Amino acid sequence: MTPLHFLQSTAAVVLTFSLVIFLHESGHFFLCKYFGVRVEKFAFGFGPELLGVTSGGTRFSICLFPLGGFVKPAGEEVESCTGKPDEYFGQNWWRRFLIVAAGPTMNYILAFALFTSVFYLKGLPIPSSGTKIGNMMIGYPAEQAGLQIGDVIKEVNGTPVDSWKVLAETVHRYTGKQIFLTYDRGSVESRLSLIPKKDPDTGLGIIGILPDETFQSIGFFRAAKEGALQCWDITKMTVDTLASKIYNHKRPDLAGPIGIVQMVSRAAHSGWEDLVSLIALISVAIGFLNILPIPLLDGGHAAAYLWEGVSGRKPTQQMVSAANSVGLAFLFALLIFATYNDILRLRKSPAMPQAPAPAAASH
Image (cartoon, rainbow, N blue to C red; front, top):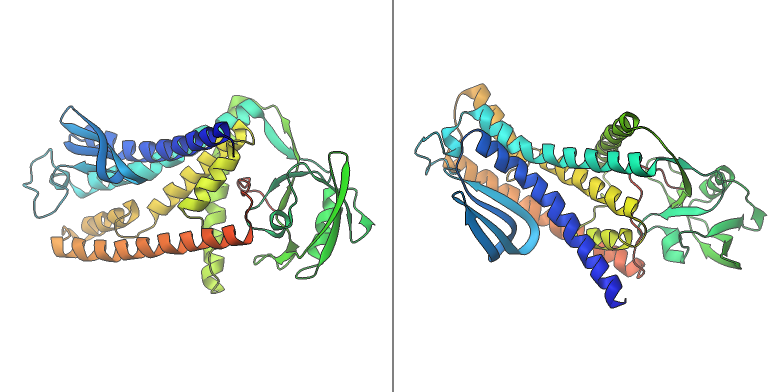
C-alpha cells in the first residue's frame, strides 16, 4: 500500500465514522436544546479525552476510542435528577422519547440525503445484460478465487455464456460443486475454479458477483423517491435476513469494526458514488440497530419511556442499572461476534474486500 493510498483510506474511514456518529449524536443534542435540556457533554468516541472545548455550558470532546459517541444531558440519572426543567428526567416521558428517537432519525435522514445525491448526480443504476463484473460481495467464492471487478466471464465449464441471465442460471445449478470459469481481464484470457455457495434464502448456488451498470439521468424528485426507497429496501432486507437467520437457527453474517474499515477503505478507491452509498448504508445500519429495544441503545430507552407513558411510573435507578448491565453484556458479545466474523473473512480472503452494492442481488 502506497502512502497516498493509505492516507486516502484513512481519510475515508475517519469521514465515515465522524459523519455517521456526529449526525446521530447531533440529533440528541439539538432535541435536548429544543426542549431546554442542559447538555453537559457532547463526545465523539469513548475513553480519555484527546481534544476538547467548552462552549455554551457544553464540553465538546474527541476521545481516544472512536467506536461511537454520546451526549450527556444534565439529570440523566433518575436518582440524581432534582426535577428541574433543564434536566433530562425533569422532562415528561414523551419528550425523552423524542430525544432518544432523534438519533436514529438523523441516521436515516443522512442516508436519505446521501442516496438522493448519488441518484441525482450519478443517475439511476441500470444493470447491464453483459457478463462484465461490476461489483463483488465480501468473502464469497468469486473474491476468494481471485476474480476482480471489470473481469468479463466468457465460459462456465467450457460452455459460452453471452448474458448475465445465462451466467446466473448456470451458476445457480452448481451449488456446492466445482465449476471452471474462463474470463477476460483486459486482453488476457484466464481460467480458474471455484465452488458456488448455497444462498440460504433461495437454496441456489451463488459466487458473489454483481453485473456492471449503466446510469440513467433522473430529476431531483425522482432521485428523492429512489433515495427513500433505498432506505426502506435496506431496512426491510435487514429485517427479513435477521428473521430468516433466527428462524432457521443460522449464524448471522455481521460485519464488525474491522470489516467496516475494510469496506470503506476499498470503496474510497472505487469511485465517489461507492463511498457515498456505503456511508449511507452504514448510516441506515446504525439507525436500525439503535431502533431495536436493547438496553443502553436508543430503542431500549424508548421502550422504557413508552412503558412509563402507559404505566405512569418512572423507571427506578435499580431497574435502569439492571437493564444497562444486560445491554452492555449483549453489545459486548455482539462486538466480539462481529469481530470474529471479520477475522474469519480475513483468513479466507487475504485480499481487501470490495464494498457491497446496497440492496442488490448477487449471483
